[in-house]
Image 1: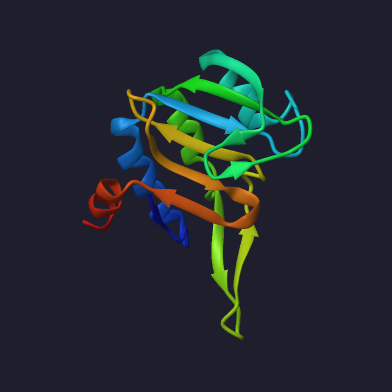
Image 2: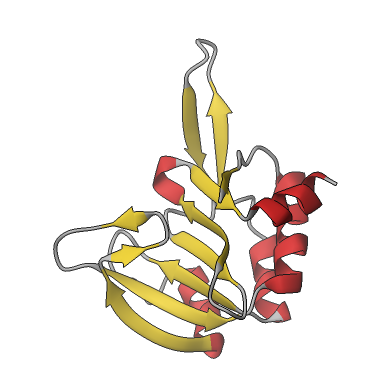
Length: 143
């Protein structure tokens, strides 16, 4: 997987276009605890495949009691909803050259897009501002 900096809404929309073609399932992890009233989770419920508690997911290992993980079927309607968000987060560089992250309307949930073989195509560690993409998708995104 390759690191990718998310820096604009335009880039985010292009990323979703590339992902939509290959994604079969999406995993969403609520790192701050289960909140079924969160708009993203409410919108995902019609596409729910599995709900579980996880201590390990793409890019993260966690101790304790774990976090709620929702596996959903990729669907055009869900991708339409994702396109309404500003981005998963924005990677920023301040005036001193330090890297940081700016939270968006998406919130802090981690998200992963998986292909039909359950291989990760793209995933985030949202609150830390990390995103990773499969090399072939990065090449397609960069044209």
